Image (tube, rainbow, N blue to C red; front, side, top):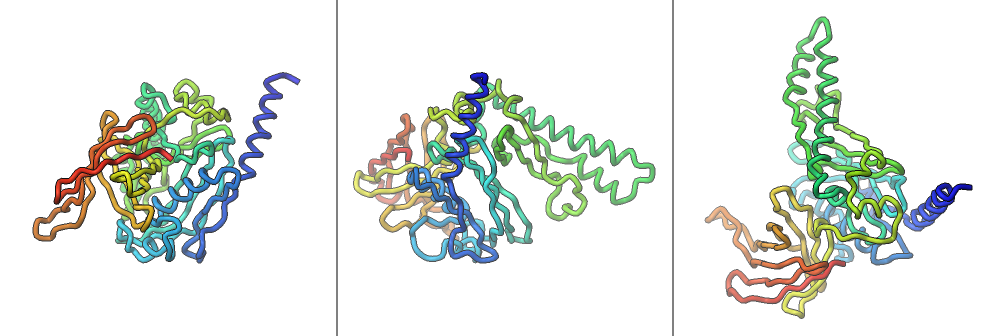
Length: 356
Protein backbone atom coordinates (compact mmCIF):
# COMPACT_ATOMS: atom_id res chain seq x y z
CA UNK A 1 0.00 0.00 0.00
CA UNK A 2 1.35 3.44 -0.94
CA UNK A 3 2.39 5.85 1.81
CA UNK A 4 -0.13 8.45 0.58
CA UNK A 5 -2.93 5.89 0.87
CA UNK A 6 -1.83 4.91 4.39
CA UNK A 7 -1.75 8.59 5.38
CA UNK A 8 -5.23 9.18 3.97
CA UNK A 9 -6.66 6.19 5.85
CA UNK A 10 -4.98 7.33 9.07
CA UNK A 11 -6.32 10.84 8.63
CA UNK A 12 -9.81 9.47 7.94
CA UNK A 13 -9.68 7.40 11.15
CA UNK A 14 -8.50 10.40 13.16
CA UNK A 15 -11.23 12.53 11.61
CA UNK A 16 -13.90 9.99 12.45
CA UNK A 17 -12.57 9.63 16.00
CA UNK A 18 -12.53 13.35 16.72
CA UNK A 19 -15.89 14.06 15.11
CA UNK A 20 -17.40 11.07 16.93
CA UNK A 21 -16.48 12.69 20.26
CA UNK A 22 -18.44 15.85 19.44
CA UNK A 23 -22.13 15.47 20.20
CA UNK A 24 -24.89 18.00 19.63
CA UNK A 25 -28.25 18.05 21.39
CA UNK A 26 -31.08 20.56 21.87
CA UNK A 27 -30.71 23.49 24.22
CA UNK A 28 -33.46 23.37 26.84
CA UNK A 29 -36.26 24.29 27.17
CA UNK A 30 -36.92 22.96 23.69
CA UNK A 31 -40.17 23.76 21.90
CA UNK A 32 -41.38 23.98 18.32
CA UNK A 33 -39.86 27.46 18.07
CA UNK A 34 -36.68 26.86 20.07
CA UNK A 35 -34.70 24.04 18.50
CA UNK A 36 -31.16 25.29 19.09
CA UNK A 37 -27.86 23.36 19.19
CA UNK A 38 -25.77 22.82 22.30
CA UNK A 39 -22.39 21.11 21.87
CA UNK A 40 -20.94 18.39 24.08
CA UNK A 41 -17.21 17.63 23.82
CA UNK A 42 -16.12 15.87 27.05
CA UNK A 43 -12.55 15.38 25.76
CA UNK A 44 -12.08 19.16 25.61
CA UNK A 45 -14.32 21.10 28.02
CA UNK A 46 -12.71 24.45 27.12
CA UNK A 47 -13.57 24.03 23.43
CA UNK A 48 -17.10 22.92 24.37
CA UNK A 49 -17.56 25.98 26.61
CA UNK A 50 -16.24 28.42 23.99
CA UNK A 51 -18.48 27.12 21.22
CA UNK A 52 -21.62 27.14 23.38
CA UNK A 53 -20.84 30.59 24.78
CA UNK A 54 -20.31 31.96 21.27
CA UNK A 55 -23.55 30.45 19.95
CA UNK A 56 -25.72 31.54 22.87
CA UNK A 57 -24.33 35.06 23.21
CA UNK A 58 -24.20 35.84 19.50
CA UNK A 59 -27.51 34.22 18.49
CA UNK A 60 -29.64 34.40 21.64
CA UNK A 61 -28.02 37.33 23.48
CA UNK A 62 -27.94 34.97 26.45
CA UNK A 63 -24.95 34.36 28.71
CA UNK A 64 -24.71 30.67 29.65
CA UNK A 65 -25.61 29.84 33.25
CA UNK A 66 -27.05 33.31 33.88
CA UNK A 67 -30.46 31.90 34.82
CA UNK A 68 -33.85 32.16 33.22
CA UNK A 69 -34.97 31.05 29.77
CA UNK A 70 -32.15 31.40 27.19
CA UNK A 71 -34.73 32.08 24.44
CA UNK A 72 -36.58 34.90 26.23
CA UNK A 73 -34.91 37.86 24.50
CA UNK A 74 -35.14 36.58 20.95
CA UNK A 75 -38.57 34.98 21.23
CA UNK A 76 -40.20 38.04 22.84
CA UNK A 77 -38.47 40.68 20.67
CA UNK A 78 -36.71 42.16 23.71
CA UNK A 79 -33.37 41.55 21.98
CA UNK A 80 -31.26 44.34 20.50
CA UNK A 81 -32.74 43.73 17.03
CA UNK A 82 -36.32 44.16 18.39
CA UNK A 83 -37.56 41.32 16.20
CA UNK A 84 -38.89 37.87 17.02
CA UNK A 85 -36.47 35.07 16.17
CA UNK A 86 -37.47 31.42 16.14
CA UNK A 87 -35.17 28.44 15.65
CA UNK A 88 -36.66 25.39 13.97
CA UNK A 89 -33.78 22.98 13.29
CA UNK A 90 -30.03 22.42 13.19
CA UNK A 91 -27.73 19.92 11.55
CA UNK A 92 -24.12 18.85 12.07
CA UNK A 93 -22.34 18.70 8.71
CA UNK A 94 -19.64 16.30 7.54
CA UNK A 95 -16.30 18.12 7.58
CA UNK A 96 -12.51 17.66 7.95
CA UNK A 97 -11.47 16.52 11.44
CA UNK A 98 -10.50 19.96 12.81
CA UNK A 99 -13.77 21.62 11.84
CA UNK A 100 -17.28 21.66 13.27
CA UNK A 101 -19.89 23.12 10.89
CA UNK A 102 -23.49 23.51 12.04
CA UNK A 103 -26.40 24.65 9.89
CA UNK A 104 -29.26 26.45 11.64
CA UNK A 105 -32.71 27.19 10.20
CA UNK A 106 -35.35 29.47 11.61
CA UNK A 107 -37.56 32.49 11.10
CA UNK A 108 -37.16 36.17 11.99
CA UNK A 109 -40.24 38.36 12.33
CA UNK A 110 -39.62 42.09 12.35
CA UNK A 111 -41.72 44.18 9.99
CA UNK A 112 -42.55 40.87 8.30
CA UNK A 113 -41.71 37.19 8.94
CA UNK A 114 -39.10 35.49 6.81
CA UNK A 115 -37.26 32.20 7.06
CA UNK A 116 -33.48 32.12 7.28
CA UNK A 117 -30.62 29.65 7.04
CA UNK A 118 -27.29 30.22 8.76
CA UNK A 119 -24.04 28.31 9.20
CA UNK A 120 -21.56 28.42 12.07
CA UNK A 121 -18.05 26.99 11.71
CA UNK A 122 -15.64 26.29 14.57
CA UNK A 123 -12.03 25.18 14.91
CA UNK A 124 -12.19 22.07 17.13
CA UNK A 125 -8.55 22.53 18.18
CA UNK A 126 -9.30 25.86 19.89
CA UNK A 127 -13.07 26.33 19.96
CA UNK A 128 -12.69 29.56 17.99
CA UNK A 129 -15.17 30.64 15.36
CA UNK A 130 -13.60 30.39 11.88
CA UNK A 131 -13.47 33.74 10.07
CA UNK A 132 -13.57 33.59 6.27
CA UNK A 133 -10.77 36.14 5.84
CA UNK A 134 -8.46 34.18 8.15
CA UNK A 135 -8.59 31.31 5.65
CA UNK A 136 -6.75 33.26 2.95
CA UNK A 137 -3.42 34.97 2.54
CA UNK A 138 -3.70 38.75 2.87
CA UNK A 139 -2.59 39.08 -0.74
CA UNK A 140 -5.32 36.67 -1.88
CA UNK A 141 -8.36 38.19 -0.17
CA UNK A 142 -8.99 40.57 -3.07
CA UNK A 143 -8.64 37.66 -5.50
CA UNK A 144 -11.17 35.59 -3.55
CA UNK A 145 -13.62 38.49 -3.49
CA UNK A 146 -13.22 38.68 -7.28
CA UNK A 147 -13.83 34.95 -7.72
CA UNK A 148 -17.00 35.11 -5.64
CA UNK A 149 -18.28 38.13 -7.55
CA UNK A 150 -17.41 36.57 -10.92
CA UNK A 151 -19.45 33.44 -10.15
CA UNK A 152 -22.44 35.46 -8.98
CA UNK A 153 -22.28 37.62 -12.12
CA UNK A 154 -22.17 34.50 -14.30
CA UNK A 155 -25.09 32.89 -12.49
CA UNK A 156 -27.21 36.03 -12.80
CA UNK A 157 -26.02 36.73 -16.35
CA UNK A 158 -26.83 33.23 -17.57
CA UNK A 159 -30.33 33.48 -16.13
CA UNK A 160 -30.85 36.92 -17.70
CA UNK A 161 -29.86 35.51 -21.08
CA UNK A 162 -32.40 32.74 -20.62
CA UNK A 163 -35.15 35.19 -19.68
CA UNK A 164 -34.43 37.53 -22.58
CA UNK A 165 -34.44 34.63 -25.05
CA UNK A 166 -38.14 33.99 -24.50
CA UNK A 167 -40.24 34.78 -27.57
CA UNK A 168 -43.17 36.44 -25.85
CA UNK A 169 -41.87 38.21 -22.75
CA UNK A 170 -44.64 38.65 -20.20
CA UNK A 171 -44.95 41.54 -17.77
CA UNK A 172 -43.75 39.26 -14.97
CA UNK A 173 -40.63 38.26 -16.93
CA UNK A 174 -39.95 41.93 -17.68
CA UNK A 175 -40.06 42.60 -13.93
CA UNK A 176 -37.69 39.68 -13.39
CA UNK A 177 -35.28 41.08 -15.97
CA UNK A 178 -35.32 44.43 -14.18
CA UNK A 179 -34.70 42.67 -10.86
CA UNK A 180 -31.66 40.77 -12.10
CA UNK A 181 -30.21 43.66 -14.09
CA UNK A 182 -30.12 45.65 -10.86
CA UNK A 183 -28.81 42.76 -8.74
CA UNK A 184 -26.08 43.55 -6.22
CA UNK A 185 -23.12 41.27 -6.92
CA UNK A 186 -20.16 42.97 -5.22
CA UNK A 187 -20.04 40.61 -2.25
CA UNK A 188 -16.81 40.09 -0.31
CA UNK A 189 -15.66 37.48 2.20
CA UNK A 190 -16.99 39.79 4.90
CA UNK A 191 -20.50 39.66 3.43
CA UNK A 192 -21.02 35.97 2.72
CA UNK A 193 -21.91 32.98 4.85
CA UNK A 194 -20.12 29.68 4.35
CA UNK A 195 -19.79 26.08 5.47
CA UNK A 196 -17.30 23.28 5.06
CA UNK A 197 -17.75 19.80 3.57
CA UNK A 198 -15.28 16.92 3.25
CA UNK A 199 -13.54 18.26 0.15
CA UNK A 200 -15.04 21.69 -0.52
CA UNK A 201 -16.24 24.96 0.96
CA UNK A 202 -19.51 26.61 -0.03
CA UNK A 203 -20.03 30.38 0.13
CA UNK A 204 -23.61 31.68 0.30
CA UNK A 205 -24.35 35.24 -0.88
CA UNK A 206 -27.65 37.03 -0.48
CA UNK A 207 -30.33 36.88 -3.13
CA UNK A 208 -31.08 39.61 -5.70
CA UNK A 209 -34.52 40.43 -4.28
CA UNK A 210 -35.78 42.21 -1.20
CA UNK A 211 -38.75 40.78 0.68
CA UNK A 212 -41.33 42.55 -1.48
CA UNK A 213 -39.82 41.14 -4.69
CA UNK A 214 -39.14 37.67 -3.29
CA UNK A 215 -41.89 35.99 -5.35
CA UNK A 216 -40.17 37.08 -8.58
CA UNK A 217 -36.76 35.76 -7.57
CA UNK A 218 -36.34 32.28 -9.04
CA UNK A 219 -32.59 32.20 -8.34
CA UNK A 220 -32.70 32.83 -4.61
CA UNK A 221 -29.45 32.86 -2.63
CA UNK A 222 -26.19 32.26 -4.49
CA UNK A 223 -24.46 29.04 -3.34
CA UNK A 224 -20.93 28.94 -4.70
CA UNK A 225 -18.83 25.79 -4.30
CA UNK A 226 -15.02 25.74 -4.36
CA UNK A 227 -13.00 22.55 -3.85
CA UNK A 228 -10.13 22.72 -1.41
CA UNK A 229 -7.82 21.84 -4.29
CA UNK A 230 -9.03 24.86 -6.27
CA UNK A 231 -8.15 27.15 -3.39
CA UNK A 232 -4.79 25.61 -2.43
CA UNK A 233 -2.71 28.52 -3.74
CA UNK A 234 -4.82 31.06 -1.84
CA UNK A 235 -4.99 29.35 1.57
CA UNK A 236 -3.29 30.98 4.54
CA UNK A 237 -0.93 28.84 6.65
CA UNK A 238 -3.74 28.68 9.22
CA UNK A 239 -6.21 27.26 6.66
CA UNK A 240 -3.74 24.69 5.32
CA UNK A 241 -3.19 23.25 8.80
CA UNK A 242 -6.90 23.47 9.65
CA UNK A 243 -8.05 21.54 6.59
CA UNK A 244 -5.18 19.01 6.52
CA UNK A 245 -5.88 17.85 10.08
CA UNK A 246 -2.71 19.29 11.65
CA UNK A 247 -2.75 19.92 15.39
CA UNK A 248 -0.56 23.02 14.96
CA UNK A 249 -2.53 26.27 15.14
CA UNK A 250 -1.50 29.56 13.52
CA UNK A 251 -2.63 32.87 14.98
CA UNK A 252 -5.77 34.56 13.64
CA UNK A 253 -7.49 37.92 14.06
CA UNK A 254 -9.40 38.82 17.28
CA UNK A 255 -12.69 38.84 15.35
CA UNK A 256 -15.38 36.58 16.85
CA UNK A 257 -13.12 35.53 19.72
CA UNK A 258 -13.64 35.23 23.46
CA UNK A 259 -11.27 36.97 25.88
CA UNK A 260 -11.10 36.79 29.67
CA UNK A 261 -9.46 39.24 32.04
CA UNK A 262 -9.96 41.96 34.62
CA UNK A 263 -10.79 45.64 34.95
CA UNK A 264 -8.67 47.37 37.59
CA UNK A 265 -7.03 44.04 38.34
CA UNK A 266 -9.96 42.91 40.48
CA UNK A 267 -13.18 42.73 38.43
CA UNK A 268 -13.21 39.56 36.28
CA UNK A 269 -14.90 39.98 32.91
CA UNK A 270 -15.44 38.01 29.71
CA UNK A 271 -15.62 39.65 26.27
CA UNK A 272 -16.96 38.31 22.98
CA UNK A 273 -15.80 40.38 20.02
CA UNK A 274 -18.02 40.22 16.96
CA UNK A 275 -16.75 40.30 13.38
CA UNK A 276 -14.60 43.22 12.25
CA UNK A 277 -16.10 45.07 9.28
CA UNK A 278 -14.26 46.30 6.20
CA UNK A 279 -14.29 49.85 7.62
CA UNK A 280 -12.57 48.47 10.78
CA UNK A 281 -15.69 48.96 12.93
CA UNK A 282 -16.92 46.24 15.26
CA UNK A 283 -19.21 45.58 18.19
CA UNK A 284 -18.67 43.38 21.23
CA UNK A 285 -20.50 42.07 24.26
CA UNK A 286 -18.89 41.80 27.67
CA UNK A 287 -20.08 40.85 31.12
CA UNK A 288 -18.80 40.79 34.66
CA UNK A 289 -18.37 37.14 35.54
CA UNK A 290 -20.09 37.74 38.88
CA UNK A 291 -23.47 39.00 37.61
CA UNK A 292 -23.45 37.85 33.95
CA UNK A 293 -25.39 40.83 32.57
CA UNK A 294 -24.49 41.72 28.94
CA UNK A 295 -22.95 45.14 28.22
CA UNK A 296 -22.35 46.36 24.67
CA UNK A 297 -19.23 47.87 23.19
CA UNK A 298 -18.77 49.54 19.79
CA UNK A 299 -15.52 50.71 18.30
CA UNK A 300 -12.75 50.46 15.75
CA UNK A 301 -9.78 48.14 15.41
CA UNK A 302 -6.90 49.69 13.45
CA UNK A 303 -3.25 48.59 13.38
CA UNK A 304 -3.71 46.33 16.44
CA UNK A 305 -5.32 49.15 18.44
CA UNK A 306 -8.85 49.17 19.87
CA UNK A 307 -10.81 52.40 20.39
CA UNK A 308 -14.07 51.47 22.11
CA UNK A 309 -17.13 53.23 23.51
CA UNK A 310 -19.32 51.69 26.17
CA UNK A 311 -22.72 53.40 26.05
CA UNK A 312 -24.71 54.19 29.20
CA UNK A 313 -28.11 55.37 27.94
CA UNK A 314 -29.80 57.13 25.03
CA UNK A 315 -30.70 60.77 25.65
CA UNK A 316 -34.04 61.69 24.08
CA UNK A 317 -33.23 65.35 24.62
CA UNK A 318 -29.87 65.19 22.83
CA UNK A 319 -30.95 62.43 20.44
CA UNK A 320 -27.71 60.53 21.05
CA UNK A 321 -26.10 57.85 23.16
CA UNK A 322 -24.35 59.02 26.33
CA UNK A 323 -21.15 57.04 26.99
CA UNK A 324 -20.44 55.26 30.23
CA UNK A 325 -16.79 54.56 29.46
CA UNK A 326 -14.09 54.95 26.83
CA UNK A 327 -11.60 52.15 26.24
CA UNK A 328 -8.22 52.39 24.51
CA UNK A 329 -6.22 49.18 24.24
CA UNK A 330 -3.61 47.37 22.16
CA UNK A 331 -3.55 43.80 20.91
CA UNK A 332 -0.24 42.25 21.99
CA UNK A 333 -0.03 38.64 20.86
CA UNK A 334 -3.00 36.90 22.47
CA UNK A 335 -3.53 39.70 25.02
CA UNK A 336 -5.38 43.01 24.97
CA UNK A 337 -3.87 45.62 27.29
CA UNK A 338 -5.13 49.15 27.87
CA UNK A 339 -7.39 51.37 29.96
CA UNK A 340 -11.09 51.65 30.82
CA UNK A 341 -11.94 55.30 31.52
CA UNK A 342 -15.09 56.32 33.38
CA UNK A 343 -16.77 58.95 31.17
CA UNK A 344 -18.13 61.01 34.10
CA UNK A 345 -15.26 60.92 36.59
CA UNK A 346 -12.50 60.60 33.93
CA UNK A 347 -10.86 58.04 36.21
CA UNK A 348 -8.67 55.46 34.43
CA UNK A 349 -8.72 51.76 35.31
CA UNK A 350 -6.35 49.17 33.87
CA UNK A 351 -7.79 46.66 31.43
CA UNK A 352 -6.07 43.37 30.68
CA UNK A 353 -7.61 40.55 28.67
CA UNK A 354 -6.27 37.26 27.34
CA UNK A 355 -7.66 35.09 24.57
CA UNK A 356 -9.48 32.07 25.90
